[in-house]
Length: 241
Image 1 (cartoon, rainbow, N blue to C red):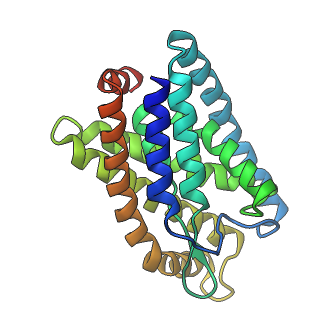
Image 2: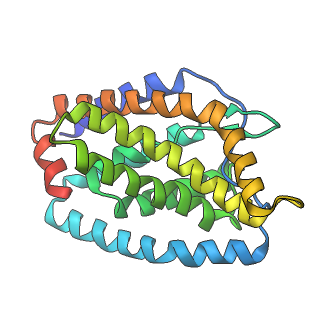
């Protein structure tokens, strides 16, 4: 199994690392007022705690899942570290969390996302410590729950469409939540939160929608690779979800 997962990881790296974008985005360090920074830490913390408990139970039941979880976390790290410029100086990137939500359910992704976002903030200056709670909630809580719900609703009709839609919608919803976070933190002087929200949503839409489509396609390819190299993958997906 280890060789198979390593091969899958190598294939992922080849496909993902081909682009070389040079800009970054999560909500950057210091961009949120302290009250909002604390608020999002408080909101995200229960999901991280529950995610740790879910991971512990999963690993106790099936230790072989550790390698797959590491693969998922690496996928999120690599994908969310790819950045492309948006308009007005903003930037966008894929999230990668839909894959993990399909394989493990949404709660473990809060832990995976926390690990990824923490390392990116410390090592890549991508995001920040004060904004970590907000970034965890948007990318590692809200997005995975949307992916999980959509996959559950559609998987019995057409699994590939379910995977594609789940991953793409998780990507888009992450940026909807990010826009809401930014709108509340920085309301427009004239139009308030609503006007600010519309501005942030329009900024991200130009780049995020194509990225969401690309991420949906990539997630289908990756899950097919995992299924090809791990015979029991279908059983594991159903078991975890």
